Length: 307
Image (cartoon, rainbow, N blue to C red; front, side, top):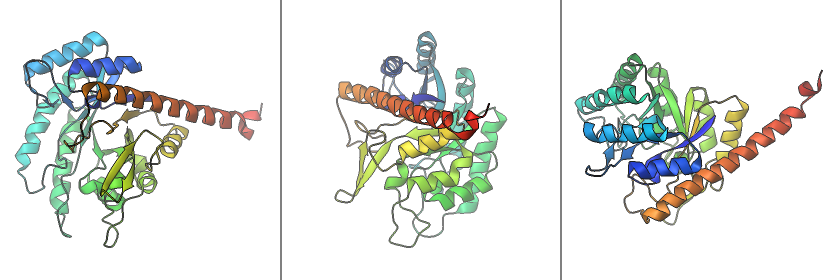
């Protein structure tokens, strides 16, 4: 087990992302958007090659690697009716970059939900099978996130997706169920239960996004919190994973100073950086306390007393 983070939440510039990662004592990041001087900020699979050269060089000098690409493939801004050529182009740009950087995982999604009952499942499954096949053939593991997409509409949709797309794995986001409707239930749709969703997809989880929140009916949106202070079941999920031998990453995505899909949530660069670092430190303390609790329980178990 190790800690990492979606580093653009510390700041857009690659040197800011590196500085935050080093300050936390970590040696990996989850790369989503990035900026280098002279080039516009963009997703890591969309920046020009010259900008990628700079990013790769700075990461190598700092001794930091990219554990996961937070791609825009099939994300909440893409419709299933859109041309598949857009997705194929993103795949074709991602693969050589990931191979060059030694990146293991790429976050993908299953396209924006449609209004009504017809979710064009056969076309979604076809596309997701092709996405998964292409990455697996290149030695890269695609991981699907439960977000504002078909697979994030509720755990039954997630299971249908996993059953129909062999080889696909899961990156579980602890807070996303809090603001997503459970469309497997009758209208008016209730919000999802993070623990319930987690337990259903647990066998496929190889990566975890840590953010926490509480639903605020007054503003019809989520209020984001530090890890363990919201309703995302962060502590029990981490505890259950560690007790089960989980050896993957916990990647912070604070959403406290900025929200990737909501441009109205902004903060100063200093506040953004400091919030990210504080979030990472609080998660480390939470993980340390859970590990100590598990160690104490293990030491006092009957099996451990048998000599």
